[in-house]
Length: 184
Image (cartoon, rainbow, N blue to C red; front, side, top):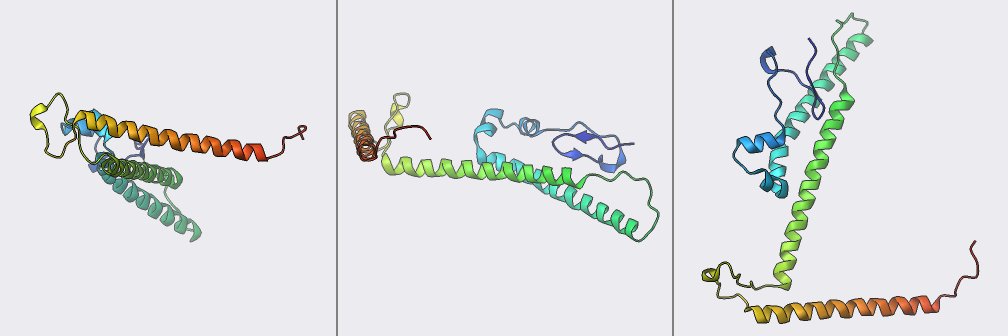
């Protein structure tokens, strides 16, 4: 009997030699645990935590396939007759492992970007603005809306000044280069 094939994970061996059960994807595991799918889509740390067991399983599968292939190649080199046991493909398992590593790297990069944006937000707008939906939750260090507007206007003016300075600089650079006479 051939092992069932899962395109994302490669050949799968059923536990205990019995018939394979339904393969659950990451979304199904999240929904079974009662976690909303929308939160999982936007939380890179939660996705990272979910991918770690898959990476561990993939690495174990990769090492198992490598050991089986090495043993079979050793038997062939020694001239021993081997049974016609189908050997799982090492390259597919390695590809699966690398794909999971890439997903983990993307999750970590996204988490880092979220953290750096949070730091930048705290740095450039250190105090909060009370929301109209929660007036009772006004914090003592929050800005009144009028002060918040003036701060935002000053940030926009600063960004416009930088933009204008860059445009002026690019015009000066373009003015100093000789115009081209023809196309080469």
